[in-house]
Length: 551
Ligand SMILES: [Zn+2]
Image: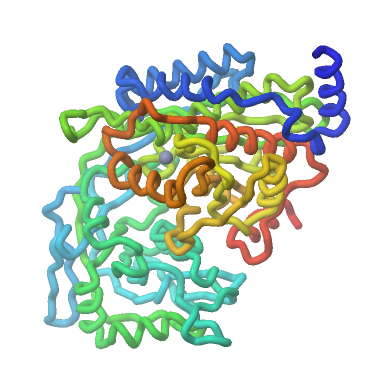
């Protein structure tokens, strides 16, 4: 036994990158389940930011990192990165007015328009702001695309379409061009968050997206759910860098607005799918004043660090998992505690056990590993956004992010899914490790839904750091065909974001342990590798990484 351990140690330290997965310390499914049960217990009150649930969760994570001998991850000697949050609730009595000459249209909040401000302020307003239609509102140099040609957008109200410009394939006009905006897959240029960000960077006063159910992927009713309190980070400029007003117009109102400007929705939409599109001023003025209720919350990311062993120790691989969930809320079937067991007590537990496995290596990897449990994912990926904007260690020296959000609780699988498969060379690490487990890697079955943009790894990707978004497999060992889809659908319909997301007696974390073993091997090998993993050409994050690394 001792001789074997020594041999294994030699094998690992000689060339960690080549150490067989089977020789790495083992992830223990029982330990993952034990942490999950604690974090998902009613005592933790659903782990909402700014509540007693946060206090307990943060205390538990710090205690566990200490117990495994991992030093604090923050340079101030603590395990904490403070994350200042603001909650802003708009007064629903607000009205949006469009005016052209004597003609005036008044849009009702929620029915016709859903709007809010990210400004940390009691009021936000636009007054007689010129309305300009900017197509899909996209600037994508890699596709020679610019929807703002010649436009000074400062102070304007920008109106745009949702999703990527649907560029037809020159070889088959019935299909989308696979070389432009990801073909059928949604790129970040298609996400509503992008639209507000680019509009703000152009100096717009307001950014309004015309809702369409097909391209958005969800009905207007989902947008209408965004009329209550919304959380955001508080930036040093109190979010004044954002447009004063952000929001959505219903499709009917969008069409009426364009008609008011003498334009036809369908004709403009067609033009907007071409590179030749130019902004279209509508000759309409927009006015809206939103009054808000504002409250601030001091939340926390929790971070531990395994220092690397040599001259590369100021370079990092970052594992993330969000610790937060929805806390105590409206009761469903008599239960008010949103335990968030699968989402994301499991991922947080996985983060702890991957960290634990790293501490059991005979020698640490040459680069340092960061274990970052982030807050407020459920409020819009805010904890990870904060880290990505105020990183404790430079992102240019961060090789990769590996995220865990919702582990497999249904047993072993023959496969593992990678959302965003094809984005970066991290895929190759995953494929190699999966092959050693006798498993295969599959892509996302629904790339048009943009899942890659919906958890914490995305904030790393957005800043240029190659980021991995693994998801549970679909092909379960010893289970009938269709089982994977059935448990997935059951979870989505009956438990996802509901008080019933609890640890169940029939949970089996053997598959989760295998996934974690794989992610451990991937992070370890990246930390040992000769070179940084790269984005593949055509990926929307590559330009940022190349600039950061001055390639
Ligand atoms: Zn989650």
